Image (cartoon, rainbow, N blue to C red; front, side):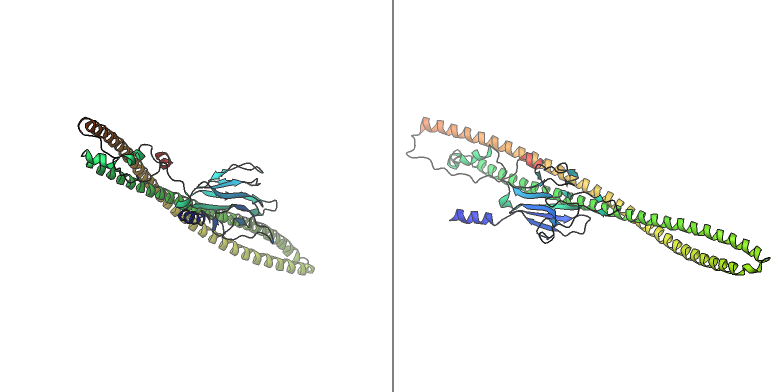
Length: 389
């Protein structure tokens, strides 16, 4: 019955994949990985985008673009033969219309689906990008491998050690196990801080992308203002031509009074052209001043963000170096603790051999087996290779 309860509890637990949008207006997705999820474009009257699925309103995605699932303690994703590709940290998983091998996702990865496409009529379609957060319960994770030398300490009879007068060795082994457990907790905290640093770096990259989009919009508006300036120059040329014609007809009107109507029409056209020039010039100057002010504000914001980015990058570099030093120190202390345990185990076996020799030479053999007491199991901690990764 206890085994049945444990199995039922594990079946109720499932891993989750959280996708936070980067630079898009999409919603955050929380995918329950108790079953595989198809990633693709929304289909009318069939599949609609929701917070619990991987369906998107995006023209650059295929209907069956990619797939994500949970297997053997890992969250995996693969491209199922899409046209515009699937990218993990800007690395494309496969060529166009080819299925890719599975790729593991980690917290802090950037997942991009498709790529930006511009049609012949200058209509652009943007891809979708997300910041990945992997949530795997401890019940579904892999148990770390135990060192081959430490389990032998559980088989040493405590009565033999105490009979040899070596109770200090038992206390030393327990102290070393406690120290190993503390080292494992420090390594866990270091990994969590490293993951947080990766998330902050991804958010900073998203801010820089948004700033680049703003600069692109500003350049587009400047192009429009240049076109307005060219139109203004054309109007000035037309006004000068009308003024020349007006001067010509004014000179002829002194001799030919029958041309008064033409002169009046030219004067009226000149007045209208002058009014249009004044309106255009006023609008152009106001627009240019507004654009120049916006450009100055954007440049100030850009320089502030760049300074903040450099400061944050320096801080995170310092934190990463400190965390790396802490991890290296923890590994060194863990190695020393293992070597001390091996030395103590050798001393214990030596004492047992000496005790057996003394029993054979001086005392009769006891009538029954010695009562053995097993030591508590050593704490679980990850192998050095996994911690380094």
